[in-house]
Image (cartoon, rainbow, N blue to C red; front, side):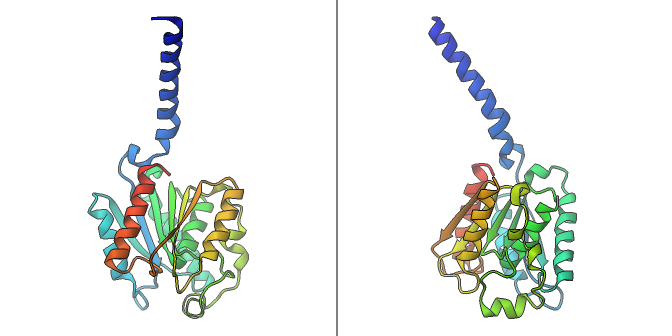
Length: 232
């Protein structure tokens, strides 16, 4: 073997070792199957209209053999927001390997998911679907009336925080969202990238604010699965 080929072989082995050491460690799938915590807007038992939709969406991941925990979260009042953050954090502690924990959050539930991560919850990645990241940001009158009864304290919103500690995040937005405009996620994406976060955004060609219908559930499932398979 010539010196050139010997040096090339050594370089290839070193590169492969670095990929295994650094790139592979960022993949939940390489560490075992991801554990998904799916959070959605709701205040059980009196106001939990989306539970059935959430469970149906969770089933698309369960069919892949993944463990999925489904839980409602509210941001209606400051107390609701604190409770939601605590519950997400406590749920994360149930799983020993934090490198596998992925929080998939619908709409307003994105707010407590992101705050929990920024406050130190053991989360490897976040998927925000039609997310609300700023209580003072653009939303529809419907969202303001039903979800933000106490909108004060906007400075505590994720977009006003230091985002440098945020785990990798995928922001998904439908192209014809009637409730939360893409501007919420676009602005959050700019702040996250400026802070050095691994953040991506995709606008999907669907009128669904969240995955409530079978076709929408499959579309969101497939996009999230591809993101996870490439590491977060």
